Image 1 (tube, rainbow, N blue to C red):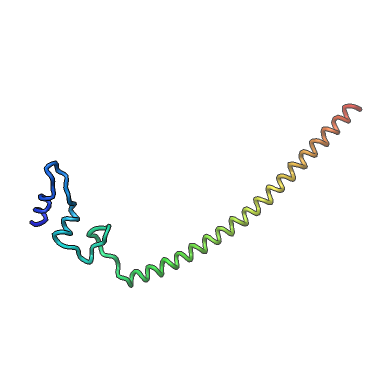
Image 2: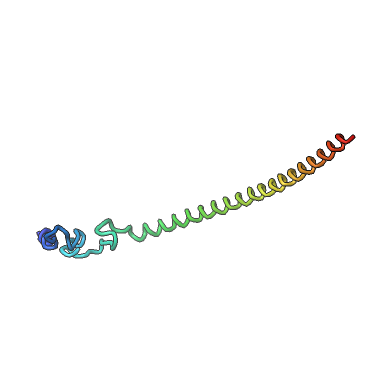
Length: 114
C-alpha cells in the first residue's frame, strides 16, 4: 500500500514521475545488503570462494591465451621472413628478365643489320 501511495504521490498531473519503481522500493523497503548499486535489486554476487576459483580458472585461461598469442606471433614472424625471401627472389628474377630483354633486343638489332 505504501508503494502504491508513494507512486501516486510522485506522479505529476502530466504523467511524468519524480521517482522510478526502484527508488520507490528502496524508499519503502529500505536498502538491503543484496542491493547492487547500478544493477538494482538483482541477484547477489557469488560468494568469495566461488570468485577465488573463478579467478584461478581465468588466470589459467589467460596464461593459455598468452601462450597461443606468442605461438601465433612466432608463426607470423616465420611467414613474414619467407615472404621477404620470396619478394627478394621475385625482384632478382625481374632484374634478370630485364637483362634478358636487353640482350634479346641487342641480338635482334645485330641480326637485322647483318
